[in-house]
Length: 304
Ligand SMILES: Cc1cc2nc3c(=O)[nH]c(=O)nc-3n(C[C@H](O)[C@H](O)[C@H](O)COP(=O)(O)O)c2cc1C
Image 1: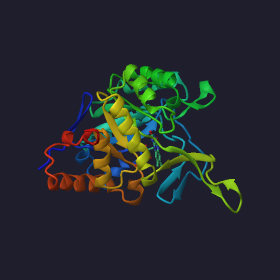
Image 2: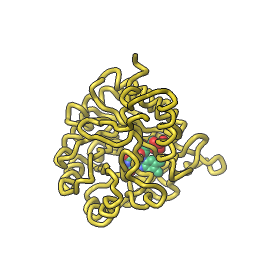
Image 3: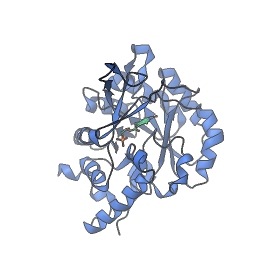
């Protein structure tokens, strides 16, 4: 039987399927549907040092092959989560990845300082740089190599292995990934949602409360696979976590072949909250049927 263990930089995970940030809340809600300890890790919704309200409704719209959301990173403060929600997730035996964001570089630093007091179940911090930088005319951190590097460097105080979550809308994602690595990221998470909008034909107005949102789900899978492929080809020593439209085990194989060491499942959990576990089990069967002894044998195989 295939050995499912995988390694992301210094982090060893029991399986290559994780949840994606933002789709399982802050973790405990999700434990009703499956045992979080069976997955590689639970990546919780992005938080910062102070609570954040997020965007006006409507925040979610279905599209042909996925959804568009403008949730806007609403959530409690990191300190509240550490004290009140993380302990309930910790008892499930899950490996947990915290996700942080900021409106400016100082807020990444503040978030990382709060996380430095976190318990052992936290195995890494995902630094979500796919959000607007208020000090740079709302330009996304992840669209600038310099801002990405600054946000990653500011997040290193947490003492946890740092993963940089990038945007597929960057003009040159290899340049951004290299900047994240130089600033101390052990891995990159590829990718966050694609910038998107839906307009109501009757009113001729944008439908989302915040007008603009992000496209996720199967529709974006080829974009995220391409990002993984390009980054692995240019920087083969940089571990990648692939995310975007992982809805089945074949998608996991695509991301691993492109160069990812693990994948995260997001939008698929809206249709089926057990999707991450179903996909992991199907992937295990797929590996056994294809005589794959270990996950690492698949990683980067599209480049050979
Ligand atoms: C409703 C919703 C909320 C999300 N919130 C976050 C978030 O808080 N932080 C983050 O880094 N990504 C967030 N994402 C992006 C996902 O983690 C993921 O990168 C993206 O949806 C692509 O994966 P998928 O196609 O499997 O959903 C969110 C996505 C959705 C659909």
